[in-house]
Length: 394
Image 1 (cartoon, rainbow, N blue to C red):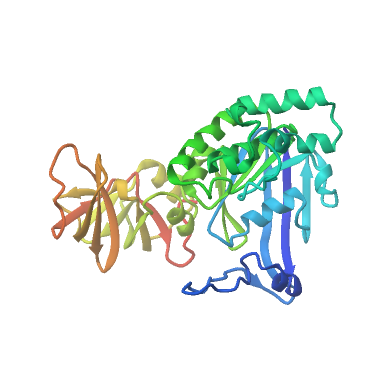
Image 2: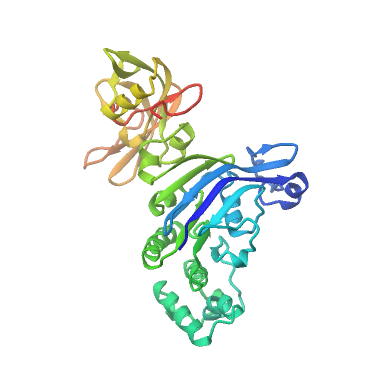
């Protein structure tokens, strides 16, 4: 339980280090695999993995770093852990500058994607190992291990070895090994990515319960935006080493700062249209085809505050906010996917792929091949600059 402060953190891998490192930056292509695109900036000094990263993480806060592969989130986590050197900037844990402090002296614990359990040790011994190294008294070790096992519901597995456990059980052991140390900061690097979908859902719930039972600051890395939305007090969306937006899950979902954030957060992702932002009697409207939609009051005020002028824009509307109407944007349904309580319609609109979600409500869902008109409410329209791709409200 500690405050973590990152001030203008930057990480550059030297050209030699980058070539030798091989952690995805210069990865050898496997047979039949498309070449991985690298968007990180390459300079004379080397590959810039993290740029100008500043974040104040409050005591006991659950922060999630989220973004596509290669965006710098794991590198940032490893710098907090002390597993990567910080090229420039300052890192404080509990008010103490720790740039040059060894990982073992930072009072942090880390849970890895690959579990990293000792196969020859029992669950009990895996969880107790770090405490034994510190020469903690045996009775205290036993108490801490059994308390952690009870919290994680793995008491019945304490005498087993990792090979006798399922993936979800192994991940619980890895988390237990971290929390027995009662660390100030608990770091998690994509801990659920090796689990199947059902287990991931279950473990997300377990992590939420765990967070409520232990007093620790969490920093969690994932590329899965569903994990980010469900787990984080705040989420940090990253791209190409830069922070794109910081906010609560609801803030980032409702008010994306730019086109990238709007497309990355939300499933299915946001739909985009070419449109025009117009002013009529001092009010902002979005014009597309024969639709002219007046924007909501909050959006009106923000656009006025920013003195936004009439212009061509990229209009963003989430699939759940598009509705079938008798007047609107014309599209043809290519595929209709029944999802139980709703139907996902994959449409072609002005040569672009568009998805809309229609509640079934016991009605026919046979939309394939039909032409439909789509509309939306002014409160849920997002207006992005064509030049900067930034949300014009902010």
